[in-house]
Length: 423
Image (tube, rainbow, N blue to C red; front, side, top):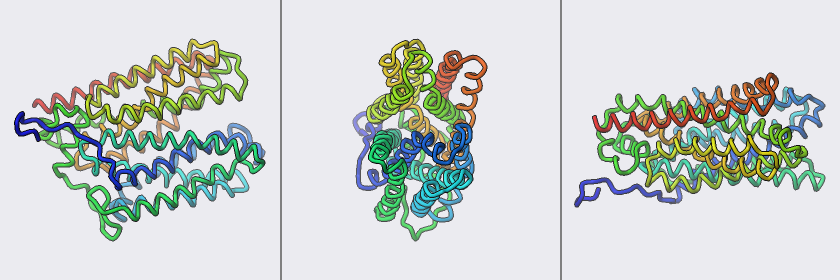
């Protein structure tokens, strides 16, 4: 508090040992996502299955997320946050081993289901702990943590490609996930105890309603309005939560629909070969990673809801460049710009949701996990169905529709928080 002006000082992200340690689970999940996805065609060849059957691994991942949604708050209550994160990292390691050693499709699908269930609990429990530890800088911490994950993920496809080139196959590249998961479990277990990460021997209960819970709501409105937001009742503030939950659905739907089908769009519109078209999707991940390191600190200066709405606008610009591209280089540029928008959407939406859910962090995160799993399961399928009916180029008109809806809802959510703050 600035006593001279009666305003709350601008929040600042402190990258202490606990903050950096809580970034490690994001590295695990980022490596898994971006190393295994390009390996799916190779797995299909080895098992002698169709592309549709191989695509069931995405379905298994979505089902794992659905299971993790109600499991996460129970795990945190029963094991404590630290114990839940350590256990989830161990489950990821076990699931990946099953995925890599599975001799048939049922085995690999089971391995992916276990991996996804553990991974979603891992990220969900960590994000709430990180938000509690960072307080009013939660939006910056969560965004940067996701940036670390996607940046690490950029190395995953390169590692798989190198292993395949050396004749080792795709498995050693994906197997790095097991090592990273075990390292993350050890790091989390050894971090100092704090409110966001109690000691292993402690038992966690429902998140208490404290000043940290409520003042973290500054993430939703920006530092300039932190003081009035601190006085908002829990009941009134919770009215904005469903709006930010909707932006999470939009963000995850956009990212997954694009990563699944952008290759087909680039091939059809530019005439690029399969290898070049597939490589252009790396531009999306690169854009996402770069933006997350920019928008995190920026969210401490500008209202996060405004940044979130703007990110959906940037996504529309990227889509327009991609959709009209007739050259692979232009399509790559469009995906990079779209990545700038996509990169900010999920972490800002989560930070805003948690800020609008004081005292209910794990429950809100469970709702986000459930919504994300549904978006993963529905969005790529819907765009694929539209592609079958109207062609991929026409089907991609779904992207700006979802983006515009996400931007409008983000503005409504921010306005709801500000209105309740003034009240």
